[in-house]
Length: 97
Length: 484
Image (tube, rainbow over all chains, first blue to last red; front, side, top):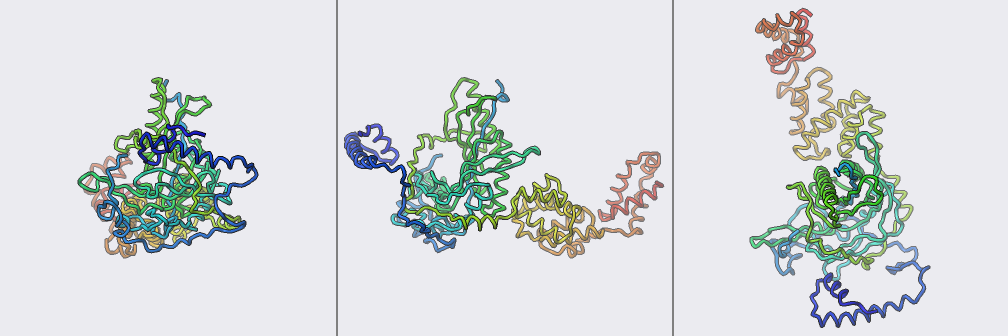
């Protein structure tokens, strides 16, 4: 199944990617091929199978974390890798709501 | 066609911050405030490779909320990623629940104009809060991002479009807030944003069977703003329909300064959150035994408590409703009543102070009942001073205010401020004689039949005694002297 250029542009927009026209065509082809590959799974009848999102053994109870406060990073360290800072806040372009 | 020919239809989405000590997926503190990013770690900063670990208390609080609201608790629920880009969302997705939320169904019952209403719920799910954007942090107009709130646990409680007026929406939210506070899962603070509400509003012609196109309104952080926003939005939509224009489905922001809603351009592009199951978190398993243990430990809920106050204490529906709106206040009331006495008369007296003077003082200082310096025992002491005739109404008010502010013992305040009421007949008689002698004209009129002048004389005597005369004794002596 071929993905339209329109759909590729929409996906790029949602992912905040700027694609050239050539890239749009390239990715339309590649993405379509991936979808077709995965779509082979549709040949199997799984109507009676519960979707498995995680590998959890039957009857296994996933661990929960007890509600206890642990030390956070020092704010200077937390923001050390940021391209721009204002005090210990991440500095970003003006946000308009 | 006037607006009265239209029916407004409202559904609310309420976000409530859960009162846990640590965040939903990491051990960072949920405390409000602190330096920007002082409560952050690799998990809530969204650093690569960091893995979330679900907080047990979040699950338990969500289940308790669901049980209190009559929801079905799903034995196995699943977290999902809600993908979108926004500066306050470090990972580029919010961990929420989508197809399989922890609670489904349920309802909220509330009272409006003496009638009970019920709004059904769609679902309750768990999710993480986003960070906070701070505008104009520097001279160049940049914004700042503080991720202290990122990862604070929330439950989102979604109602069906069952509400039919702004007033119903407000009472629904009040009832829900009281329940969340009684459960101890939320602090009810709308101003600080720990309880937030979005409203889906549409209008339809009365008698129509199909709902109109809805708009979602955000940013209403008080009951008053919720009411204003819904009323404005309903009018706006009716005017559009009247003018033959379509209502466009969109997200709108309430502007409290202008009292109106406006389109949020930042949300203009169609939502496409591309939800998918969160691969980093296993499903949430809630065992039946846990549900039963939490159900058994539910506290008395506000409506049950209000009914009990009416039935066994004889309080009015309004007084009872006022007291149970805040579980901390009703707990304080219970303690004060226990310290003072029993029965309807005692209950009414205590309730009057709690709803009146104490609510006013607490509103001024913003203190929670548990930290009031006026303890339940001290209010009981004040009431006993009134019963013994030691202080009168105005004196008691001064004592209560002083004790509330300083925590002094009531009898010490009475002594220190000289607030004791004078009941001694000799002293009162002297003041009465003086007032009567100074006002011969009024005395003449009174004796001539203008009996309502008694209020004037009482006022004069009280003034003479600087407010300390025992009103009952003053009245009795006046009437005797005036020849009644």
